Image (cartoon, rainbow, N blue to C red; front, side, top):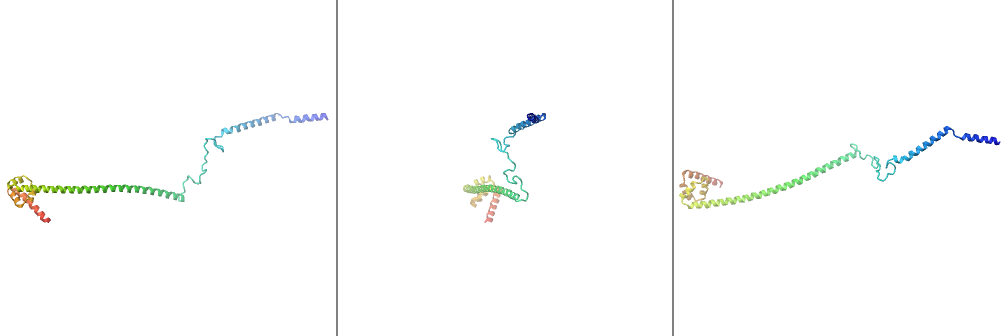
Length: 215
């Protein structure tokens, strides 16, 4: 019995001892386990910062297109849709507001120009009135001077006055003679050259006719 038991134990130990194939299989498994461990250890270095669920310090967050935005945002509304009509009305309102503002600016400019024109017209009227007043004063002074000279010539002797009137233009001489008494003017004309006296007589007659027609 003791010999049979020893023989059975050796047979069982011989059956559990691995062969050459078993050794190779164990080596392959160990190598695969080592490679898998190295790959898992290298994963954190291969994954970029922020790609994981928790972003690292200073890493920019990953933006997912469309996240947090409403459906259809950033896309043009369909033609004829309520959104498209509302957008068109808003644009028209903005254009009308711009035109209205431009018209208001033009109105303000036109009012300013109108005020300047009115001021210029008023100034011209004042200047015209001043010129008329000055002209009236000049005319009055001229008439007074003519009357004084006429009185002076009238007091002179007719022959001496005739010599002076012969040197005057007929129209100028007629102005003095018209301011004199008729007898004094006639005496001067009688002592003047015939042609000069005739020309002055025609001018005096024309003035008398014009003043009679005006009356």
